[in-house]
Structures are given as structure tokens and as C-alpha cells.
Image (cartoon, rainbow, N blue to C red; front, side):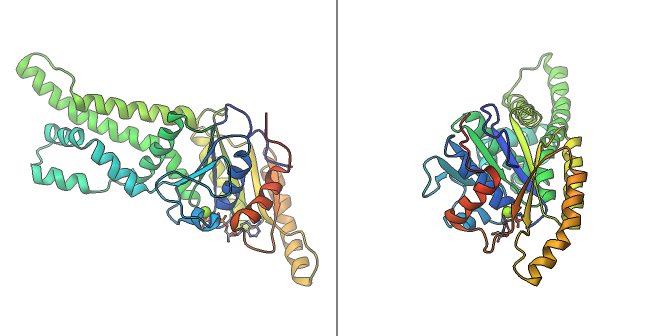
Length: 317
Ligand SMILES: Nc1ncnc2c1ncn2[C@@H]1O[C@H](COP(=O)(O)OP(=O)(O)OP(=O)(O)O)[C@@H](O)[C@H]1O
Ligand SMILES: [Mg+2]
């Protein structure tokens, strides 16, 4: 079986996730390479480990660059700290005014507070960056590589966290509005209200894309081993709770060779797990990828992987 439906024009966002080391980055890049033949594609890495650069053998940073040797593939590594710094710089006056009008903090405390990191803010900023790209509409497809399971889940639950933050900020503002109204009889909306409203819209935009099965697809990557299967099960359950449904699963590192005793034993050892995957994830389209003799690095081996994931069929719809 091959990955299906990725060529659908409505499908914009394809997210790869799974346990550490199962092949998320390799599969995300190979899929992006295949898609880029017919669609203008942006590969986005949210993994702080910089593995996209290593795998592509090209320096990718927090700036979109064209991937060497491809006609239509660009890539960016979203660096959460830089995304947050950019956000604070852009909205410094609104954030400062929010704290000035809703707390008893003095100027020095406020400045210090604006340099502090808020838990979960990095994932929020990463996702906001992705959604901003999608809304700018410069590409047909956005393929996202995530760091291991917990990170993907935090990324996906980031809109909820942002929503809670906005609610707290709005409550803090409410007291300020009440005071102004009591003293002057009326209240005029200011730039802080507009800022909170625009953040609220961001949350809605993220949720709308994530939960729309025609626009977004999450592809779990698994290997035929006990811990990976358990973790994939939990990942899919948590995704389901967030309203995100997967249609297909990649089973990577499947032993095919029986050339030596070691290979035979590895292959036999994988059989019960492959069976278990077929049973537990029977509702998903299953794509098996063989274990290659060499690591996946550079366009040539990525193209080999791409053939395993998507075959040589044209992706044109
Ligand atoms: N089918 C395969 N055959 C051989 N090697 C593979 C295969 N798939 C992945 N690899 C190799 O396994 C290693 C891990 O792959 P990759 O970096 O894609 O995993 P990951 O899930 O993104 O890891 P991380 O959780 O650290 O981000 C890499 O060295 C890669 O080249
Ligand atoms: Mg990776």
C-alpha cells in the first residue's frame, strides 16, 4: 500500500509524528519531496534537533530556503525562541499596556516579565508560525516534521493553551474596564482589546484547520516494536480526543532480507508486532517501509524512501 489522498487539492497541512527515532523526519522529507513534483511545497520542521538540515545535507534555519536539487520544495526550521522573540517585539506595546493596566507591576517588573518565557508558549508560537504561512497561501502543501510524541501533542493542544491565556488576560482587563466605566461612564476599546481579539481569532484559525479532515492530516510513524506500538496507540487516542483523526500509518524499518541468520531472526521477531499493528490499527491504511541497508541521508536515499511511501505513481490529481 502507498500513502493515499495527499494529492487532494484541499489537503494543505500534513503532520508527521511518533515515538523518538522511528523515522518521522525521513518520512516527512521524502513525502515533501514527492509532493513538490506537482505542488509548491513547504517543509516545516518544529524539531529543535535540526535533523532536517542533517538529513537534507543542507543548512536550513528560521528562514525559508529552496531545497537544493528540487524545483518546488522549500524548507524552514521554526525556532520557537526566535518566533516568541519576534512576537514580543511585534506586540511589545500591547503586551506592556496589558500589564500596565491590569496589574500593580511597576515598569521594571513589566520589562522583566516580558523577557520571561511562559510555559507552553514555544509550541504556541511554532503553531502560529505554521498557520501564518498557510494563511499567506504561498504554497499548495505544508509538510510538518515534529519532535517525538509529547511534542506533537503539545503542538496540537497549543491552541487550547493560548485560549486559556487569553481568558486570563481578558479577565484581568475586565477589572480595568469596570474601573474606567465607573469613573468616566463609558469605555472605548483600545489596542490591547484589539490584540486579544486577534489572538482569539488565531486560536479559532488554528482549530479550524486542525479539525478539518479535508485540510489537515496527521500521519503517525511506527516501527514493529512493542514500545512504539503502545506509544502510537496512545498518540492516536490523544489525537482523537483533540478531534484529529488519522487515515493512515507508516510502519517503518520492516525487515525484508533473509540473507543471514541475524536478518532471519530480526524478521521473525518483527512478525508478531506486524500482526499486532494490523489488528490494532486495522482502521488505518498501512504503508510498510523496509529497513534500508544504509541510513537515509541526502536526496538519493530520500528518493528511495519516497518510492516506498508513494510508489512511482504521478501525484497529479
Ligand atoms: N527505513 C529505514 N531504513 C534505514 N534507516 C532508516 C530508515 N528510516 C529511518 N532511518 C534512519 O533512522 C534514523 C532516525 O530516523 P529519523 O531521524 O527520520 O527519525 P525521527 O523519528 O525523526 O527521529 P527523532 O525522534 O529523533 O526526531 C536516521 O539515521 C535515519 O536515517
Ligand atoms: Mg526527527
